[in-house]
Image 1 (cartoon, rainbow, N blue to C red):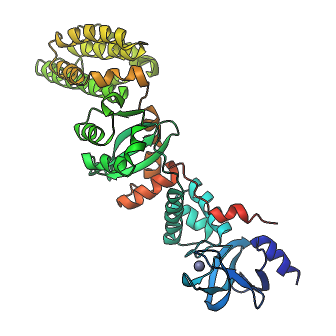
Image 2: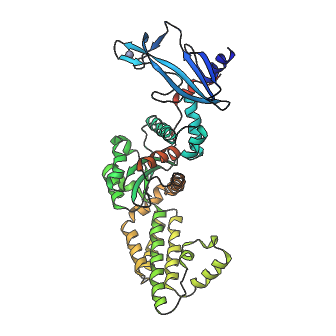
Image 3: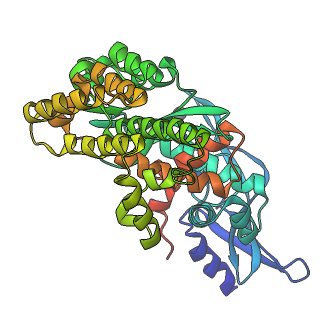
Length: 416
Ligand SMILES: [Zn+2]
């Protein structure tokens, strides 16, 4: 039958494996492809590769393969076992599927492409498999990809926290800033959440880390200090996180001032929250007109805003020396502003200044991690929040881990 040869080719089967027969079930719309090997065939021990005669065959198993013209296609075979004098009785490697998988490699590859493009529910529907099967496929792709990863530590690392399940739980994300990939996801945002990542690498490797971008968060700072040699000169407090502390301070000033004004019947600051947070370049004409008025209205919020805007300049300097001069002026201005939240923010930064200025040696920011964060937000949204932290981790590694997700065997079994 010609179909036999066609299916041998479609399955990418090589000697000794051949297609023995193909059955078409019109009622069920199934194609059943039976695969076998010649009698007397020898197979390699999966542990040592020694060629051995067949010891016995396992019961017939079925693997889902790529559809043939909308017909669900299944491969049937009985896997041979060999008895190695050294390693005992083992099932031989089957060229069309990964150990333990119920799908052929080609089907898994298609499923991975689908899962990368659509959410699990949609991909499962297109592939005509269950949600659990799709999820399991994704999980196995991640485990495979992570197992195949080299044990190199990134040179530039970004550390960030991520709230999941509506802020009830936190995860610690470690990113490779050069590759824009999520390298590690730790439970919680404690010292151990981050230290566990570094501790998995030998001391020698950890020494090779050049820079770590992070927030001024004591748990993470301690984790770096206690596990990364020379951490003091490698930690860089991320400029975007620093600015966020200052932006929060501006917002506190606005709230306090608005409350005081309202008590006196003045609604100048009503509904102005986002004006102080938005880049004027992105405002509508109407919003900008109002903002221009507010800015010159002798408000405390206006002064806080001007302080915040001025601080951005810090990272434009090319040397730590000039940046330090600028910092001293800004710090004087901020601490003499009589705006308590701004004074607190200035003092917070001052306490961490040495590792703010390491920026001028390493020039790293969490901007990459922030980009990944929005990708992660999409992943979360697709899965309606991932209440289960293990599911969240698998999905993030799948979409943001930069892993080779595809079955390795595919590279040796090109169709045709
Ligand atoms: Zn062996």
